[in-house]
Amino acid sequence: MFIKKKRLLATSLVILTTANFSMANDAVSSDAVIADTVKEKAAEGSLKLVMRGLLKDTQQLTAAMLNEDFTLIAAKAKIIADHPKPSMATRKKIMKTLGADMAKFKANDDVVHNAAVEIVTNAEQKNINGVGENFKKMIGGCLSCHSTFKNRVSEILK
Ligand code: HEC
Image (tube, rainbow, N blue to C red; front, side):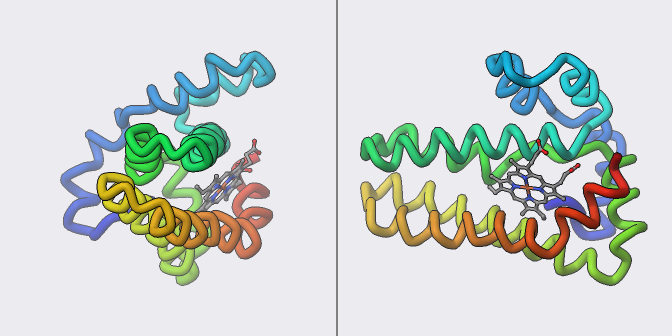
């Protein structure tokens, strides 16, 4: 979801740059631990901020799963599936650095997205085992991207 098809990319440039970062902001504003300097970066579409939002949503999703609160599971998984993107400037930087590896980077994000969508479906069917299987796939996408790209990308976004 970091880059869509070229066709979309052109038409959505304006929309994306003004994309909705309120989710990331909300997640952070309730977390006193995170410093104000990071909040300021949210306006610039920091990837860190997006990731911290994902962490919070994943933690809440885990709690919802263990409490078998299917409404909350579906709600949290939906937020993860549609997580905010970093700014266009940030994404351009990532694309430039990763080059041909961008497809692999994006594939990891797709794993997370698709698994989160499947969680919503299984939550609606109150299928906790299905949700559990989807969750494994989802978290695998997080970890796989981190092990392959986190250091490299983190370095260029400093
Ligand atoms: C497509 C790649 C990719 C996927 C998928 C991904 N991440 Fe990340 N994540 C990154 C990168 C790159 C960084 C480093 C960002 C930086 O340092 O600026 C990061 C950093 C983080 C951090 C550390 C943020 C900080 O404060 O330094 C957390 C927490 C995190 N991700 C959570 C998640 C969770 C939870 C998921 C899955 C739901 C996930 N990530 C999926 C690429 C990814």
